[in-house]
Amino acid sequence: MAPDESDRLSADDARILGLESASITGHTLKLVVLEPGAGALDLEALRSAVVRRLPSQPRATHRVDTSGPEPRWVPAGDFDIREHVRRRVDARCTSTTDLWRIVSALMSEHLDRSRPLWTFDVIGPLADGREAIAARIHHAMADGIAGVRFLNSVLFGPRQEAASASEKSPGQHDSTVLTPLEEARRMPAALMRELGHPDDYSPFDRPVTIARELAFAVAPLAEFKAIGGSRPAAATVNDVLLAVITGGLRRWLGAAGARNLRAQIPVSLHHRDEAAGDLANRDSFLNIDLPLADSDPLRRLDKISAETRERKRLDDADEMYDLFHALGCIKRVGAVAQRLAGSAHEFSLSISNVPGPRDPVQVTGRRVQNLFSSSEPAAHHALRISAISCAGDIGIGLCTDPTALPDIAALAGCVEAAYDELRGAAGI
Image (cartoon, rainbow, N blue to C red; front, side):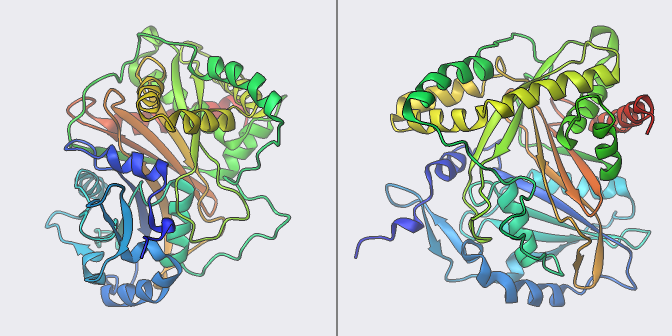
């Protein structure tokens, strides 16, 4: 019997799986911080709750089989929930600093390829009673939007009500329908906008090892919206996020020598009509200039907002997705194009922003206090920044290789200071 084509990894998923190496783990990490409880989280209750909901996510009990000519998803016959939902024991686990150290170590550990590519590690309790769950999901299994769907489906409760057909949720994408002639005309222009600005300067162009160091910051989402709404041309939450990060990097790198940097912004191309169990990668990107050289926080925000607004109007993310998929049909050409687009000469760092649960959520009766996301750095891109929203807050995760960029906690402090500076300048 011929194998089911639906079990074959998509071209995007297979490419991401192929990036894994001794220094690249290939997974993302969502840090779920729970409010203090009466006692330690009941691990068996958590396992039972997750197991009941796993049937909604077929890939959760499948592993990747690479023995054939193409990687495929196959059932994990020896699936054991105890290998995927477990407690991380650490004798020194009392403070936020300890929590960051523990999740940094988890971020540097490869997931077991012989099992399904996800784990939930329970950490704590900390001295203040909080506990955390470090959810690792391999990027070959799910991108940012799909990863949040996975958590909503198997971990968070109460489950979120599905958006109505007329309601557009953050992160969902509608493509502009164009004729082949219009597509042919737009492609070269998009290529020049996104990849036509090579630069030899990148402070993060350093080799990376398997070591990881994580730090996090948090801010009220309502204030991000208020800052954006205060501008003459309204800025989005993502524009404000990029402006805050720009200000943080300016402080961290030193204002005297600050130079503009180019950031790659992943764009999800998931559509509204997709099923919650559809975890395949559908990502593109925009490359945006971060004006670190500008000393005025509001001017930095307005510049970023104007550029992102124009790129979205021109639908560059769709153009780049179509281009790379077309080039991917010719393997050697596609590989060369991917290397060029991922070069440190094209962008200095990646900054992602994924919408999380809009309303408060809980895990086995414990309310989620904070939600953070972390994605790993890459060769010649030693800093990675990821943001995720949750019930009125936006969590910002910073990930580096400490052998390349030490003391990432200092950058987290600079990001928080830059947020205060921007909020004050906007009069919020």
